[in-house]
Image (cartoon, rainbow, N blue to C red; front, side):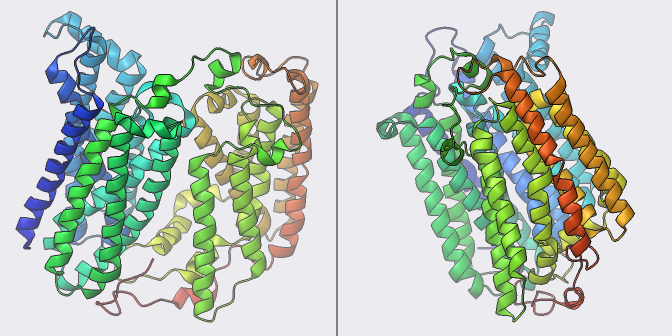
Length: 638
């Protein structure tokens, strides 16, 4: 198949398959059926899911093109510029489609009399600025317009990275509104859908980008780029499968519900996913290795077939979003105080057994913890294959840190953190002062430099991005002991004694931000204490954090009133300690946590002078695995 036919056939089959699947799905699920009251008309009923499908496809292409550029291509080459052009064009389509979706959603929701008059304009303006749904589509439209300009204007590594981060962030508001019915604000469903949307975007958008990149790639580059994309696709497949299963568990509560129209659409999407996985296995294991020149015709026909299956999955997903899930229809009313505040029933009493059996899995951090262990062990295994040793103590420390991260974000600390101030404090202390030292002592950066292949073909892999991050001025500032100390003190008090804590309890995205922020700040502090060769600096940092944690504990212990009465005091608990007693328990936990920096400093005296954590072994500076630069026929790994 020649390049021109591929560029025409691939996107056309994707769009046609997606549209056909959408129409069938809407007919099956009733997503475009006339309403009994306030029906907006067939144009809106059918037009809204169509423009939403266009939003999904264009947003995916935008993100996928940027990720492929950052991970697989060479800057200042035609291939890189073409990928950014694809991202810019997709973002432009995304802008128009998001604006149309916002308008159609307004008409569908409020059924106003559409006109060019001032009254209609005022209604639309209030919808876009004063309602959550309107703000989502306004933000998405503006963000897409900004990305259109950025992707067209930038051509450097750092600026492209910023553009990609903005593009991924632009998907989040849509994902929070991507359900039908009452599950739209359910934390587990929201996080599962965010991960799902990002995984699909990288997978689908990357494949579309390959189609447009083919004429810009030289004979020696096609196989290399395809190999790198297949790595991205494999990771995306895992994310999509896991997040899709998690989302299904929140929407299907009884196996008999799989026989509903929602279940049928879900089954179609699942079948398409597994067919896509099988196609990926075929071209990863068989066809890539046989590629010569610009690639065999069989491979590119397989790419077209994969685009067709992705179109079916995308159309089914768009129809699924318009079909009420059984769990949405049957969801009970929120009646108790705990249910009104958290959208979940009050858990049973926290008993010693519940510390082991209570779970509320946070999919994002479960994926991070599992991926962290898997990739770390893969790096250790790669070193051993080439006769390089890696200390078992580091592997144990890293694994313990990741397991503790999983328990803190998904175990009893998470299950009871919304209801008990003491458990919330325990989780924060672990994220700030317990888990980061374990991870830092695992020396993941050093392992990455040792185990991941060095690229010398002008592209950036994981190793090159890690090295670029350590050289960045921003990280140099953040790693300064004074800055790390100020950030830690501000985080301790900000998440422990201000309304920021309330925000992290109410907003699922705020909750995820708090976890990521705490881990980052804790890691910066742990790195400072463990690697500082100056005892005075180590003592100053340790003393400041110990005083701050102790002060936070005393603040909780000694104040006469309840600090967060509108949350912890309003749960309606009839078991366990009273809210004021539980607040004092939280204070005791903070005071115990104040001892941890001292223990960390003691460990730092042993390892800091030996540069145990941050040293870059001499062998890694000149070490390189076989890459495309040494043999054009050999793909680069990592």
